[in-house]
Length: 246
Image 1 (cartoon, rainbow, N blue to C red):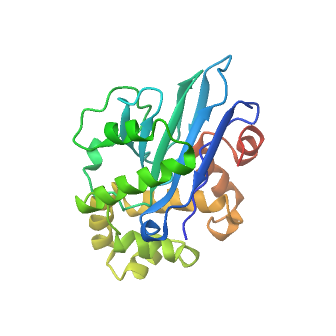
Image 2: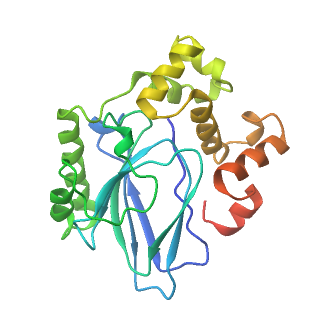
């Protein structure tokens, strides 16, 4: 199954902890993981999270100020997010195509303002606030189930089929054949459900796969791989592996 990498945390930072947990089996087709990112003590300098596109949608909850929350998604290039010297975030990472809400309402940058939407994000964040990470997972599962009842998250049969057959997909034509669609049908369907064109979706997924497998499985040659990697992450592969934990 699709397993995107964690966002980049510089190897030189030692007082920031990250943990994640798999969802209960009933939610495993919707949720990649529940996660928590926080400072263990106040940092000397602001912490920059190097967020890499993965086509997933995240619900983000600020545990230091529970009014602050949002639905986030990156497109095809990285974002450097300055989280400051003290922070505590909890979130839910949904698989590509699962989010059924309005994609135009998602944020692709730092979420730093009170949530004013209709989702029960602030109430959930308040319920999480006094719990340890293990206990938080039950509350996060309850939120996912609420979103399912509201038809805001659901299994997307098109992206699910693509993600289940990644080893056999090297081109957009392969993607169309896997989903039994014409390229034009795939274009319309994927754009509506994910916000991505088939080409951009494949570009992001292929980049993610390159962290797990040898790049020549998905790229024409080394030059093609390095060029694509730099365009999406801002670094060459060698630079990225030197700077960030992967």
